[in-house]
Image (cartoon, rainbow, N blue to C red):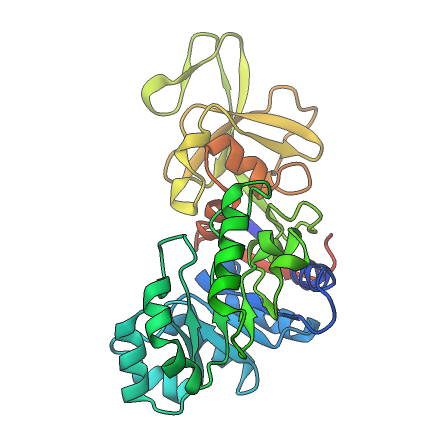
Length: 349
């Protein structure tokens, strides 16, 4: 095997959904966010695992992603589109029974004219300034919108990964002010909002990153592991360099393993000379630059010659690797490349 082995534990995904679902009171529905190909892990298999666990509503970023979920799940579950009703999406929304989350005056007009009577939701801007009707727009249009019977009225928290951030309470108050007399179901919380407690749960929650083992859900079961095969091992003398630009020079004789994987596989150059890989329980430092297809690793201290090294697994989560790279676990997950051999396991965790 010359490519990395990416193992995805579908039972862990299902267990994380059930754990987040259990944090809400009875009567609050827990959906599942499966945008970006289920955060890079394969939307078909992941969506089916979540449906088997009990999820009945799914959220995607764009209509094309909704098509993949509908193909995987069939006609039953509700699939909502965060980007709303974009120009050119009308046939797909209609034919696949997607529910666009309308987020502008233009989208409201497009949807009501092109698909009268078709289900929809509406997004409100409570301060994030990304998507959604602003308070003045909502005040002017709310009666018209509510008369059409939206499936959901939602907003999105900007700082839910920081529970004490003042923005959370400001957005909660704004959402109450804009929707407390609305009869339609309401939604504000994704993973971080769920963890902040029932004040943020309303009628439906929308967990995403927590399903896939990422922070801020620190009780999540790990979902992914990634093993990279060793292509070659060589002995490097003191004073010799490893990799591009001579960024690592041996201070003493070093045994170096070159593994198959690199930034073309979503392993960022920012972890060069910083991150470690693991042989069983033993950390092995990365030496030099991460290149497009190859990474060099110090295995001098190992008592045996490894056939593969682990970069994601029990000893290093996506958030651990993200910390080293100066990014977030979302980015690590969604950038995992297409060259890996993917294995869908049951009960790894």
